[in-house]
Length: 64
Image (cartoon, rainbow, N blue to C red; front, side):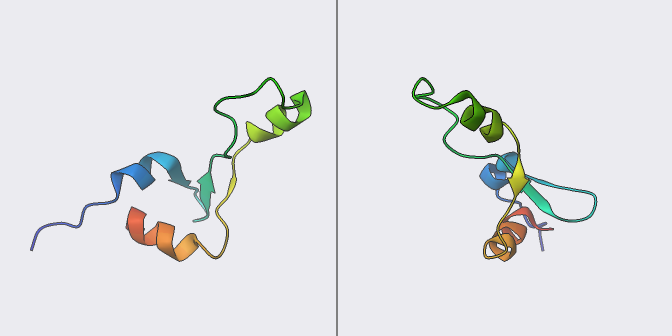
């Protein structure tokens, strides 16, 4: 039986940390940035953890 392939789109969007938690990039930071405040844009640069409701789905895609 061949090896399982990970979902390549998900593999590019999520990173697994050493402790096993999954990090993701924040949305709303790609365009129309003129109306957003500097504080909001600065906070959008930071990565955040995947919500607990979505962890099992992301893990299945990443084959972790």
